[in-house]
Length: 118
DNA sequence: AGTATGACTCATT
DNA sequence: AAATGAGCCATAC
Image 1 (cartoon, rainbow, N blue to C red):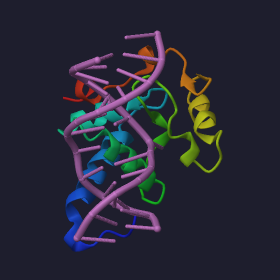
Image 2 (image 1 turned 180 degrees about the vertical axis):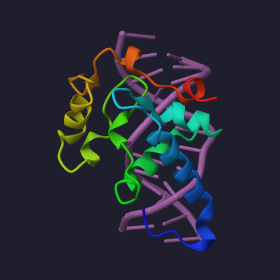
Image 3 (image 1 turned 135 degrees about the vertical axis):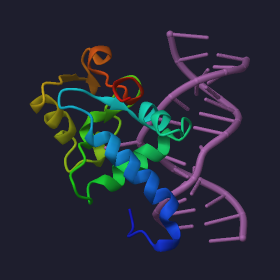
């Protein structure tokens, strides 16, 4: 994302909240755009979580964007990584297997912030 | 300034 | 079961 300006702090705060949640996803687990949006009280703003991920490559500390997939476990964001296989490779490194761009046994790897965080 | 386009999801055909 | 429409709202042009 562009450098945020003081007058544009609203969405930037939302992005930061997204990044904070994503950083809490343990290695070996995955979450979804919708679950994160819902946890932040913006249930219908899943697309904005995608935007936050798009912007997350440039920020520090690191955001494990590979751990966010869509609600079916599909790696919809893979083309935004440096290479079209990087997302899958990162997940595999963490023990999450991917076949046909989908997380294998997604249900058992799903990490829901609304459940895991209290 | 207005339209189009998504790293989405859900309800409705 | 698959397709469609709608809500979402920051960016891009």
